[in-house]
Image 1 (tube, rainbow, N blue to C red):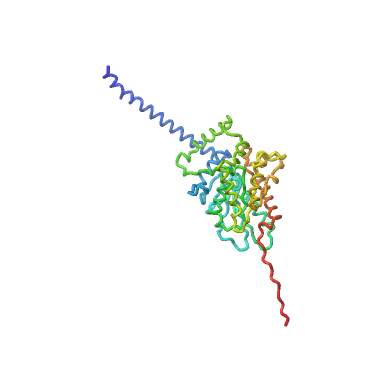
Image 2 (cartoon, one colour):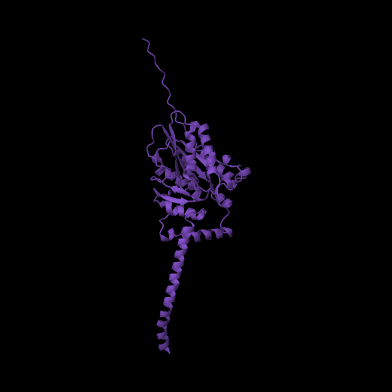
Length: 357
């Protein structure tokens, strides 16, 4: 009896091995086909979660500075949210610029996150490029050309934007700095790590994003108003770090020429219904106490029809081309009406001396 059982073991195993191998190969084949199908399906898409993942996978690289975490891949390129996104050799979504400014050129650097980068809009429809064109239409004496450099990086917060300027951006020797502050800037600095095979998988990214959507539908993720408001807790280390970074904003430019633009969350801005007025007020008070001028961009964005007309897509409230034009218009008007904050002082003319023979 024991002999029969002992003899049956290897025989059963030999019978199972081909079935297990077939099952494993079928599973691998199914996963590969699904991976390939998702790559085709999301090659040109406007799915916010998948496009943000593609952006991180294709255009970001980690750095050792913990306050910076990541930068753009130089000379990177990707097709995201229906538009081409090209990164120049200096890591900017912009044209190539020399570090040395051309003579009689006034250079402005815009720091910010994906809203400054220009998520979902062509390069020429980003705020820096629209502002650059508008400023060049009415140049003051002594300035032959304005340059507005786009230093926006998706998922950056204030800590990272200040760290970027202090370690990289100042090499461009800008005459003026515009920092765009968004409501989620007090979030902790996100950590970007080198992506191994699994980090490049569309299938893993798709399943992860859909699982997150399910958690939101089940109420297991905080509602957006509650989440953003919770970031401004004085006891949270991330908000404390944000406040320290804001205090350093006044020293970004060697000539102390800097403007902070408060960009509202675009879900609810009409009819004086913006839910984050108190948060904007706190940030504005902190900056003005440091002598930093502030502009609240909600004033020129609200009441232009339904808020969704300012969004990139009905499911993604990043500013679209219309919103970017309204933002650039407000910034241009600020430069026009506040020359004392940015226009270089003109040297006083020495009185002429006439010698009478």
